[in-house]
Length: 294
Image 1 (spheres, rainbow, N blue to C red):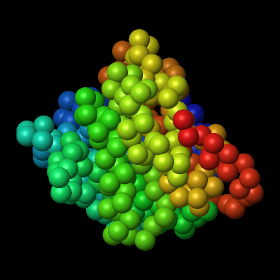
Image 2: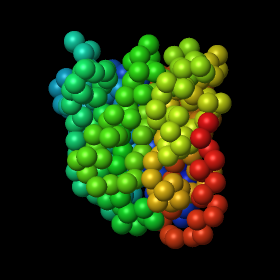
Image 3: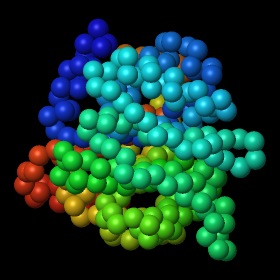
Image 4: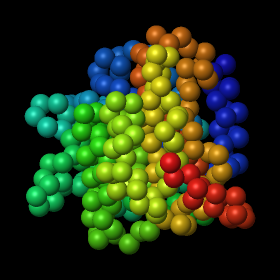
């Protein structure tokens, strides 16, 4: 039943565009790998997307991503590939970023592990972005760079601001004008107070467009209402290629009729997503995303 309902979702979203998603899967390691009821939901969530950024992969054996790829490809009608970062973090605590994507729709032009060695501002990021440049021949914007970030909550303001320096660094290396910043920014509630936004360059410079606003709850718990997970765009061609109203959370708890406890066993975050148009339409409607800066 679940697979049948998702097939309908795949059919509907394919008509609109390339779906790009970001998901903090919350401490994805051996404990979750061995629980089929959790793993099956994670695979269902991932298979909705054409490009999926996963965060909080905790794996010191380098087995998790190949295992997940095998499960995903056995489930999906279209095959996936992946690229993953090294294990990132200070001291003994480490995580990985990983991008799972459909090679039929996109390919990886280049990858870049940001070194976080800016003079006078070294080691500003807890988990330095693993930057990926995608080529997407079937979308209006034929290429785009994704810069992921999972911040340390108490350092969210500094780390989100640091994304501007990452952006400048990547622009010096690559020729792309299209940038997507996404991930668990911890960008709300007590971690980024309203008065602190003026200190974040990615927010106060108008060429950056924030698609997930400050009122969107990206958390699973009914007791919280926090816009932690975000999607930010830079580049006119990319902005005009967005399918209107496609930037949203995916509430898997509701979609799969789960209790809160069951959903929290998967993650305490909902994925966020956006779609790029696959056929050229009038860009008049898409231009309204210019007014979504919050």
